[in-house]
Length: 225
Image: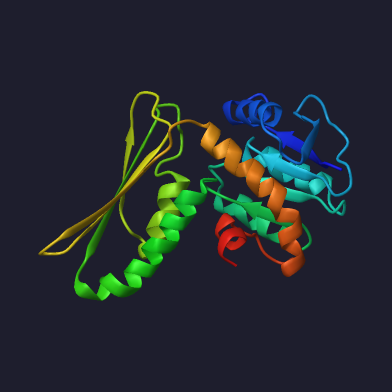
């Protein structure tokens, strides 16, 4: 039996990609609701909720549907400090996973960068990070760039570029006096993030049996813990 899926932000670009992939690929999920500000839907007990809407709307939905054993997969960006505090409080009693990027390769890159910082940071390697996105992206630097930067060290500078219709490019350069080590991740289409969110939605409910509520989980937790 397929697990019911509720999709927030279904009319947006990412929501459209999620629906397209659901129709094309054999995910063990059944789309049962696409709520918006003008129309509420019933959230089935035990459903997975994928969010690609806006932080305030996502928060209102979690607050209005507490206690239904829902699994929240949050991909919306641009969260403020106050909104983060509200989400952290809700996570004490709700299953919530939030990711700045649903690419599993990006998560592996973040882990590799953390490992390299432990080995190369003491050898005078300096890190520089550049992220490039389309001109419609409002937040800068991107959440992905922040995640990668935090894997190296707090307050790591990030260069942000907004141009054309670029889906997402992240470049990392580790440089010492004698050598340069470079990494580049480029999203070829938004389908990458939709597929990652769906893969996460399939796996998250079973993964929660390994742990307890009390915090906001990350895609890194799901992959590496």
